[in-house]
Image 1 (cartoon, protein in one colour):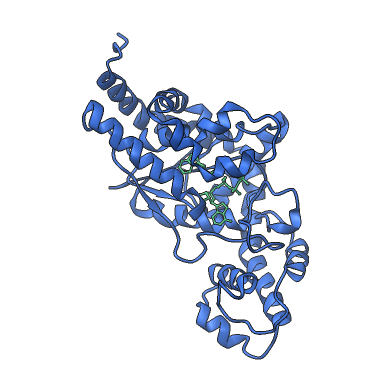
Image 2: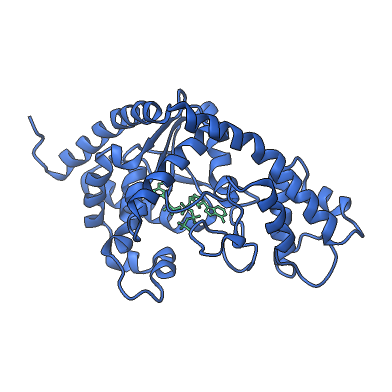
Length: 328
Ligand code: ATP
Ligand code: LTN
């Protein structure tokens, strides 16, 4: 059985971009893979986080994983910081990553742009991600397109380690959705929808109320035409909304075009809002049940134990290959 690993940062409220780009595939992959899904809290602190908000956002991710359909008895659901091997292999991987490689990372460039002081952790962030993935010998990593560059770095560092110290790590493959790999902001189709965007109108959060969802979609930017047609180059805003629609319904892009032929954007946006509400309402109700059940601590304990059991021997082997004296 192949191994799957992925994670989301507790750095804000999860959006439909996180759902389409990542969580939807986590749910699909758990059926026939050995799965590890975490909230990457050690990554989230590479930009300043308020402690109370960090805790709340981390719990939110875990509860949303379960509410979205990840079964904690099938997949390990855990906090990155509960499995200490992440921090340890993370350090080791910073020593195997080149400065030039880190300087080329677009996520670092985007997140540090215009900031006066930037923590060194933001720069070495990708090395920790390399460790996250190699620690489980993951074969597949479900991610959105923005993470492709980090995955390529992971593959390069895995090769580098294997060449220097002998075959140790599996070289992972990305698993990126065909439609929805990059959901764009509702207010600006040149920017990725992102949970840390200060404008809440730019994203739909998985926990937004039905009325918020309707309002945000009615305000979503479109072009001045009235044709519902998939053409990402010339009609990026409408094409983005169509991609979201296809992901939240059983309709294909062609069927969406046919359905709204000659109708303008009003009816299309209204139906899209209802399609999202219909999917999110049951998810939100499961979410509330899980938060109220007090079950999260147990899920996290079980998940961390399963994750550590897989990770520890892989870390021990890597250290031994590098020449560390094994502890007795
Ligand atoms: P932040 O704004 O804090 O950087 P984010 O919303 O970009 O966060 P991450 O925690 O960085 O989310 O990403 C979690 C997963 O969701 C990753 O696999 C990422 O590729 C995916 N993802 C995030 N945003 C989108 C999006 N707009 N479209 C598709 N996938 C996305
Ligand atoms: N860098 C990712 C989050 C992340 C991740 C991982 C994703 C950290 N470790 C391991 C997949 C596998 C992000 O910003 N979305």
